[in-house]
Amino acid sequence: DAGVTQSPTHLIKTRGQQVTLRCSPISGHKSVSWYQQVLGQGPQFIFQYYEKEERGRGNFPDRFSARQFPNYSSELNVNALLLGDSALYLCASLRGGQGTDTQYFGPGTRLTVL
Amino acid sequence: AQSVAQPEDQVNVAEGNPLTVKCTYSVSGNPYLFWYVQYPNRGLQFLLKYITGDNLVKGSYGFEAEFNKSQTSFHLKKPSALVSDSALYFCAVRDKNAGNMLTFGGGTRLMVKP
Image 1 (cartoon, chains in turn blue, brown):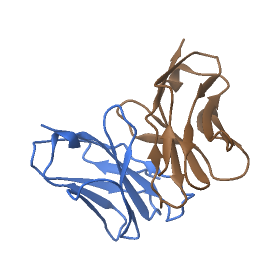
Image 2: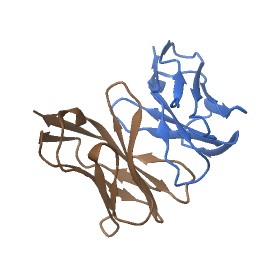
Image 3: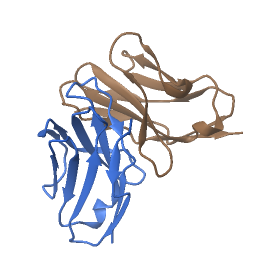
Image 4: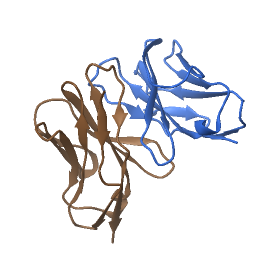
């Protein structure tokens, strides 16, 4: 079975632009979480979606938004990019909404903001 | 608020020797605890988790972790280190009352020397 897939792998944008990152969860999984990992730090939680509904939001500005589609894939959007948004963006797939579920991570999208 | 501390930025060990990567946590209730490993330019790979039950949890690639409630610790261990174990290791905690959000530590770089 395929694991979590993310696209694109790398992305370079300039300040003020907008970006959309995409994630496809493991087949059969219905929940997706997004994390931001700044170089040298641990990942920080941005959003979690389950059955197309937002189930959690981290401490990120409203420039960050996300959605989940009927096929359980997800998009993360970031508007008005800042230099500080440069990071590895990780998507995690979960089977359902149970807290005991393991989160399986994709390879990430490396975003560079110039 | 929940938090995780990984007190060592780097751990050095000789190949064949036992290794320990330390993690302490703080949550308001009973914790769900996880260990992940990250290789360069890659996403996070799940190693093991503690949900309930036996305090010694066995995971992938020969790793295990010991849950100690009184010391609020969840140290990662391996009896005999391999050079290929060299990577960045993250401890994470999920508060049962905080949805599926994982809070990660800052990471510990493990260097195994031949």
